[in-house]
Structures are given as structure tokens and as C-alpha cells.
Amino acid sequence: MKKKFLFLFIVIFSVSSWGYKISSRDGSRYNIDNFRGSFRMMKVDYDSFGDKKDSKGLGYYNYIPLYKNGEIVGYGAITHIKSYNKHEALLAIISPDGKLMDFYLPDANDKHQEVHDYNWKNSYIGKEYAEIEFDGLAGSTFIANSTYGELKSILRGFEFRKKDIVEK
Image (cartoon, rainbow, N blue to C red; front, top):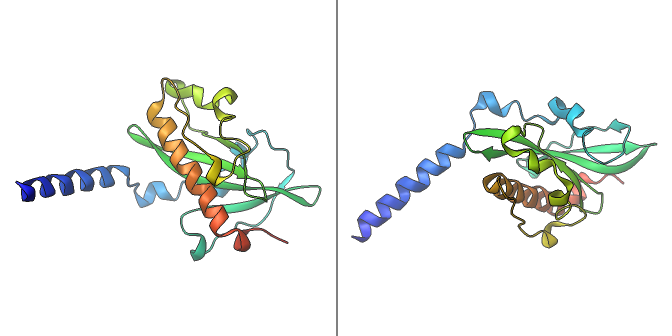
């Protein structure tokens, strides 16, 4: 019985892992340079992008400095979330001290427009990794879970590699 249960667990875990995987063709889409215009949809005032912080030490996430009058006001980051049957981009801007300034899902469609509602987003904005707690969203619970998990990961990656990311 234990062997059957273990086998079933492995099969379910494998299928769910495969379901989250994106193809290499889709993976190239999640380059921060492809979303420069979408970063303008967030409530962070900046005039230009710096050079992408792309290193093996940063792992899955890329961070890019955002400048206002020559000063860094934040760092843009990109990842993707699993949204029902597809993957969607998740953009975030993190302050130099590691707090979430804003986030945006540019691919959000009519099925989950509420992810752009600042009544929900404000429960995350202004917080750092350790302060963020899950806040559900009626009508888009799956999206809310995915977004929460990836925001935590982006902030944790920034916190962990801050010395490599933040320009002095």
C-alpha cells in the first residue's frame, strides 16, 4: 500500500511540475528588455533604465536599475506566473532598500482584471520579503496565489543578492 501511495505521489508531483514548465521558445519572451513599456504602467516615476543585472549568482531573476535625474529610484524585475493554462509576465519594482514599490501583470485579461486594483495591490506595496503575507482575491484565487509566491521570490532574491545588485 505504501509503495502504491508513493508511486501515486511521484506521478502527481511529476505531472504538476511538467505543467508549470515553460518551453524554451516561451522562456525567451520573459526578458526584461521586452517589457520596458509595461514598466511605465506602474506608479513609480523614473526616466531611464540602467544596465541589466544578469549573473549566475542571481539565478532566475533579472534586476534592472531605474533612474530619475541620475539617481536610482528602484530596480525593475521580471518573472512569470502560471495562470490557469498559460504563463503570464509579472513585473515588479523594488526600492534600493528592498521594499516592493509596485507590481504589474501586463498579460492580465478580462478574466482577472482585479489584479490591477490598488485596493488589493496595496496589501503588498511598501513591504519587504518578511512582511508580505498572502492576501486572497475574489475571482482570481489562483492568480493571487501565483503572484504572491513570485513576489516573495523576487523580494527574497533581491534581499539575498542585494550587494551584487545595488549600485553604490
